View 1 (cartoon, rainbow, N blue to C red):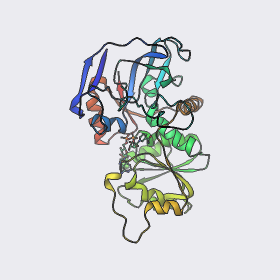
View 2 (view 1 turned 90 degrees about the vertical axis):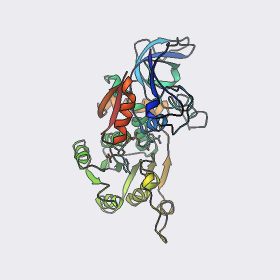
View 3 (view 1 turned 90 degrees about the horizontal axis):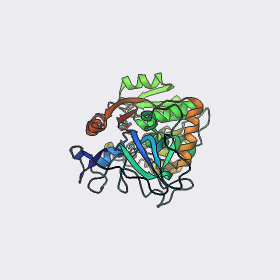
View 4 (view 1 turned 60 degrees about the vertical axis):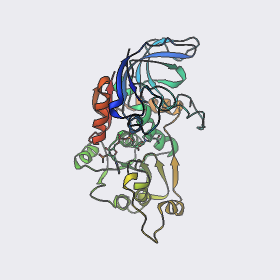
Length: 342
Ligand SMILES: NC(=O)c1ccc[n+]([C@@H]2O[C@H](COP(=O)([O-])OP(=O)(O)OC[C@H]3O[C@@H](n4cnc5c(N)ncnc54)[C@H](OP(=O)(O)O)[C@@H]3O)[C@@H](O)[C@H]2O)c1
C-alpha cells in the first residue's frame, strides 16, 4: 500500500511516499481502505514539526473510506461500510479525561490516515453520513465535529441566537453551516472581501472584514443592537480574544478553539482591564474544548442526514501531493476544506 511518512524532525520536505504492508485486523479492529482525508491547521503544525512525533509517523487526523475486513468481536461494522475516523479514538462518551484524549491519529501517539489502508480499533470509527462521498465524510472528523460541539453541545445553541464566526477555515465554515441549520443569526468575519461575499451567499446575515476593521468586536455588537452575540467561535486565541469579548453579550459563550491570531497579539494598554478580567465581569463562559466524543459525532451525523447539509470543499490534492496541499493551506486562500484523495 502507498503511505506517507513524516521523517523527524518534521517539515514539508520531510513527507515521503513509501510502500508498506497493510496489517490484518486483530480482535476488536477493522481494516479500512482509506479513500480521503482533509487538512486541518493541527495537521499543518504536526507536519511542520511543531508537535514532536516519532520518525516515520503517518500524518493526518481525518480519514474516511470503506471497511474491507473486520476482526473478531466487531459487530458495529461489516465489510463495505463507509466509515469516518474519530479524532480521539479512545474517547467514546462522557467527560474527557487524560486517557480519553491521549491518542490522536497522525499526532504524537499513533499513525494517521495519509495511507491507503489503516488497521485500528473499531472504537475509533463511526459510520459516515448516508449519501456522502468519502471526501465529504473526511471533512467531519476534526473541523466538523469541533464546530458542532462548540455550538450544539457546549453552547446549547437555539434558534434566534446570534453566532459570530471568524475567518473562512474549516471550523468556521462548518460553524456557519450548523448555526444556520439551527436557525441562528450569523455574523461572519474574513480578511478578504471576496470570501465575505461567499459567506453571504452561504447565509451569513452580516459580514465584517477583520483586517479593515480591527474593532470588529464592537461592530459585531452593534449589529445585535448593542446586546452582544450569544456565541463566538473563537479560532484566533489571545490575539483576538479582546474583540471576541467585546462582541459577546453578558452571560454569552465564547468557544475557545484556535490560536490563529495569537501571533498578532498586542499588549493591553495600561489601565484597561485585560480581556480575562472582562470575561469575568461579563460572566462569559469561556469553554475550552478539543473536538468531541464519538457520541457527539453520531449526533452530528444524524443532524446532517436529517437536513441534507453538505461540506464546503475548496480543492483536493492526491496523496503524493500532500506537501503541496499544506503549502496551499499556508497561503490562506482556501475557503472551507482542503481534501486529500487517496
Ligand atoms: N480546539 C479544537 O478542538 C480545535 C479543532 C480544530 C481546529 N482548531 C484550531 O482552530 C483554528 C482554525 O483551524 P482550521 O483547521 O479551521 O484552520 P484553517 O482551515 O487553516 O483556517 C484558516 C483561516 O483562518 C482565518 N484566520 C487566520 N488568521 C485569522 C485571524 N487573525 N482572525 C480571524 N481569522 C483568521 C483565515 O480566514 P480568512 O482568509 O477568511 O481571513 C484563514 O483562511 C486553528 O488554530 C486550529 O488549531 C482547534
